[in-house]
Length: 124
Length: 303
Image (cartoon, rainbow over all chains, first blue to last red; front, top):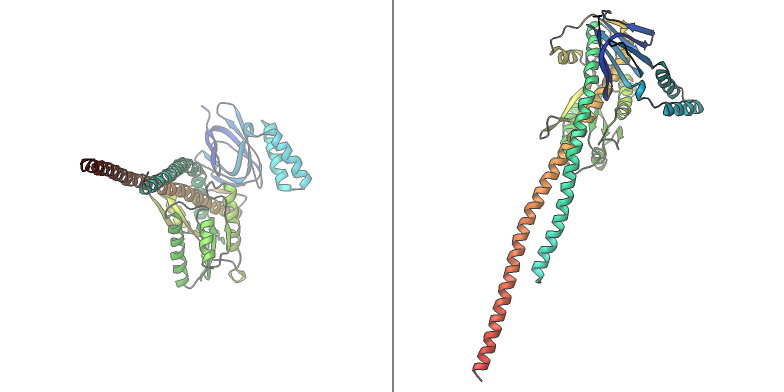
């Protein structure tokens, strides 16, 4: 059996995903970071961006994460986000509408949020 | 029908209507408590993980941060009071307000100025009626607080603590909320939110007997702490808001249950009185008839 790490993806008000994975890629403020089992204990600040989790069953879970943290120790990875959505929970049409609205209102953070959502869906 | 009996009947009808209303409110509150409790439970994983992370940075590095360093002399502190928007919850709001007032008094005795921040219309009207100064207040979300609401409440508090005391900032933040212990017990308590004492935070997680590993910080310990502590405060406030909401619904349920019980008792007493009045009326009618026929019989006999 390949080495595994336990992932907990939690948003402020609920647990979004939890399970075993072989690789997790997330975007921190200093760039993308990939965490595999046996990584050194790590605490990082996340940027808005997609998080890719390669599960032990060989599947891929993509989530849009807006702000938060990543902490890894003892093969346990916690992804804490204020808002986190799995790619199949994201309403594409709504995100597209939000993107257009954000563009017309020149709301940079809203535009970024919508963009991250759409990218999480397309990466899936 | 006699006037007395009519009055009783009318009162029974009105109390029955009231009883129906309080019964409905009791059941609504009961279902909301369960929902609110579920929300408290759903927010727990985030809070636990965040506490772990804060402990890790706090103990794993010697970083000094405005949110964790204790001011040498505290000149001003902020008190955040969580109440509800609506009443009909027994002593829920007055207990929270009382706890806040005791805390304020204690802080003032220690020679600190106190800025009051209030969540909930009840607390606000209590302070406004007494013409006490309120630094800022929020209302409208106490029944079902969302994380965005907690962020909104936390923002000015974090801003105030980062500001210099001379410019109107505060040195410490206390929070007064009603802790949800169980369906039957809710206690109003005051707690210091900031500055965080890392020992205390560490103590909470240390209870699980875990040794914290040496973390690598990305990008740096200061930056992580910068980003982490506001989130920690928000999550604490969010948790307090949720507990306060659950407590409020539990208090409403209890208050409405006793109101329903009292209405039931009142209906029973009133029905007894109404029965007695009806019986008295019947007795009187019979004696009138008997009296009348006896008088009639006497009159015909005497003819």
